[in-house]
Length: 326
Image (cartoon, rainbow, N blue to C red):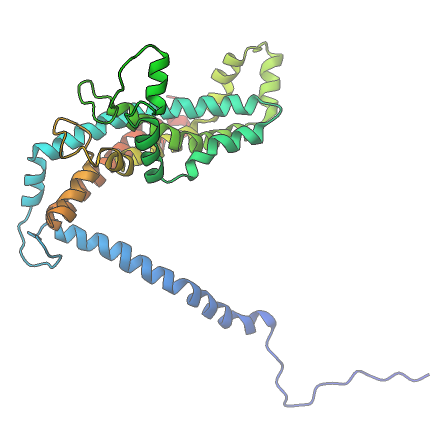
């Protein structure tokens, strides 16, 4: 019985490179081909735009976005000296101080209640989350034209009739008392509570069940004690993230304020519902004063940064376990 030796490659013929080496450069080319357009667009339309806006804030740019008429800090001085702008800052601060804790409490409470359900959890989770997919513009128009329309057939006025109120209430048009705030606050709560409820629900479901079992063995039977000693401490990181997102979203309030009060900002001069973004929108696009508009944008950005740093300070971000135990 004879065996044949395997054929050897002919002398002088080069071996093929390994698959990893052969695919290295094509993979890099594909990576660059896919990412370069996105990176270039991000750089041009975001970072270059931010830098150009920062330079515009030091220019007297009226009706143009060209640089050249440098005025230093004049735009910032005029902006901070304008009573309308400072009043808009006070408005958004008060709105933030109210809407952040209320949304936080509602979303956390809903998350705890939905997590305790044994049946229908997915149904309630989806039901509460659906408003988060609705546009703020659509939600504001539904609130203004249907729920709080001011007509006798409106939902809010129909409920008022059931409670014994005889006359139709102009919810958006009433300044004294400022009933338009009910419309603004309720639409914001309806639009965003479900989203933050999902974040809290995800955090609760990450808590090990053994902690609750051990607490019950130690005598903590009531749900309030379990929440106070286990659920709430374990949700610290989620709570900090939710508060941060709520503060940023509150300072960026524009859509519902503009669409609900759009027909009343000029007619109802006493309506104190103009946010900084509405003021900057009217300054930059209405008056074509791009220098003052850019300055105001950076003032609002600095306020968001300051509130974020203060929140991180109070929440203990960056501290070690030893520093927190002191």
